[in-house]
Image (cartoon, rainbow, N blue to C red; front, side):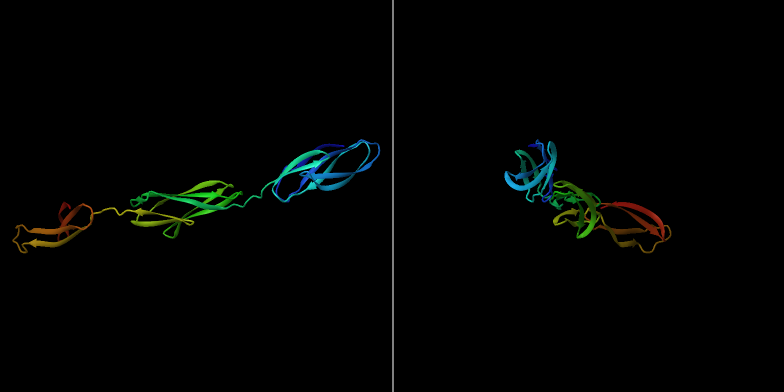
Length: 239
């Protein structure tokens, strides 16, 4: 007669064996031979000959392996148990799925935040180096480790002082930001005139100079007058 049945482990990878253990009892007085019929999903899988002494109950072990993922039922002597062959785990596949650059315009020296969304579409854990390129050159790198089917963010803070448009690239995704040119005042002095050219001691002399602001913002400049290398006077001019 047959007693309990057990299968270990209950879940395996393809082609990984399980051990089926069934308790078999010989209630007679003499030893005998038994053809142990093992059914897999109700179909005959194998026949295992077993010889038992009289008046004993012994565990009989059978090893079974299957390749295709799924749940399998093992039946021996009308007693059943199941095991599962799991789908093979896919290796880690990591990549950048989205790129965000904010703000799109900044003043020189202001911070730009670049966020790259990273996803692992595989089943196993993996590590990925997220490389940030600015104008085609590596600006920064962040190493991201993700479990299977997980996502994360790689965040970079960038500052640039030169005005212009900067191209951002992470993997195949691209974006950009602009560093604005700050309006400034740029002064030039010209046409210095001294009148009259000759005077008597103590007589006044008038000195004039033209000041031109060629910048794109108003501003102030301190104009310094030197006579024989020594500071004679200063004047603040706003243009």
